[in-house]
Length: 284
Ligand SMILES: NC(=O)c1ccc[n+]([C@@H]2O[C@H](COP(=O)([O-])OP(=O)(O)OC[C@H]3O[C@@H](n4cnc5c(N)ncnc54)[C@H](OP(=O)(O)O)[C@@H]3O)[C@@H](O)[C@H]2O)c1
Image 1 (spheres, rainbow, N blue to C red):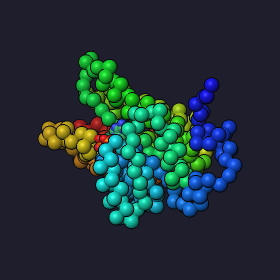
Image 2 (spheres, helix red, strand yellow):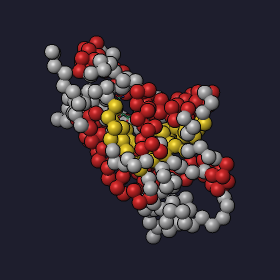
Image 3 (cartoon, rainbow, N blue to C red):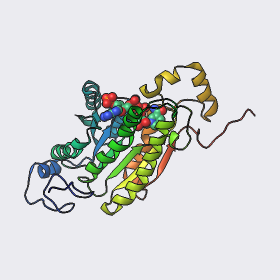
Image 4 (spheres, rainbow, N blue to C red):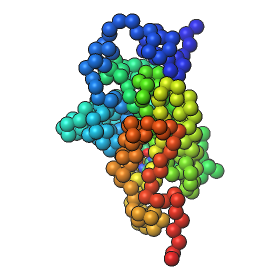
């Protein structure tokens, strides 16, 4: 009976351990010899934070592979990155198609020659009280934010170079639960704990796993919320920097955790929230 490849085994080759089983020069080796740029996959790169991250990494010399379901939006993003002088390609892929994750990663390595990084940014939410949340809502949010993140990471780790890095998108909701965001908060707390657990499990492969926890960032994810004047006022009053964040505010922390300057960091969470979490502003 065939068994699934374990973490650290390369599923693209008949291997018994990472780096073994490759006996002749093939397309992967040729591509690898021709490519010296670090290769990174960014999920949820069709818009919002993920797209800003892809643009930023391309500007900093990464060959970026953008993942999302909306192929037209991906195409627009890739075109603009290339026009800006960056190196980018797209993978239209629904990350909830978990069984396809190993194949997606194998095809990527076949084309790019290697994999050095993964930004697990794709995410979703359903607002509502936990008293009334449905099993369908629970599955929808858990599957995208937690289950798919884990199994895409598993597939990525199996082909990733030693020295590679993974950055997961958590949220301030992992630490502070906001009313109506209980399900989302639960998934993001799971992302934090997955980050720590994965960091331990892949350390022997010289792969690092960290997370960024953004605060309130203005994207399509929550436009309806921040279009409300009362919500705007609330966030500006309760954030020491007195404003919403933008996707550009988050990219630096992600690039830092992906790159060599954070080489001794793994299992860490960087909060990027304009000071919201550590403060309780009172009217003095
Ligand atoms: N915005 C905030 O205030 C905030 C705060 C804290 C944390 N975060 C986290 O940061 C991440 C990005 O948030 P955002 O504000 O940029 O959200 P967004 O604007 O709604 O973008 C979400 C991205 O995820 C992709 N996506 C969703 N489901 C997918 C699936 N099944 N397969 C592949 N891609 C999928 C979407 O692309 P397609 O629809 O094309 O598939 C889109 O590119 C999320 O993990 C979110 O939880 C956001």
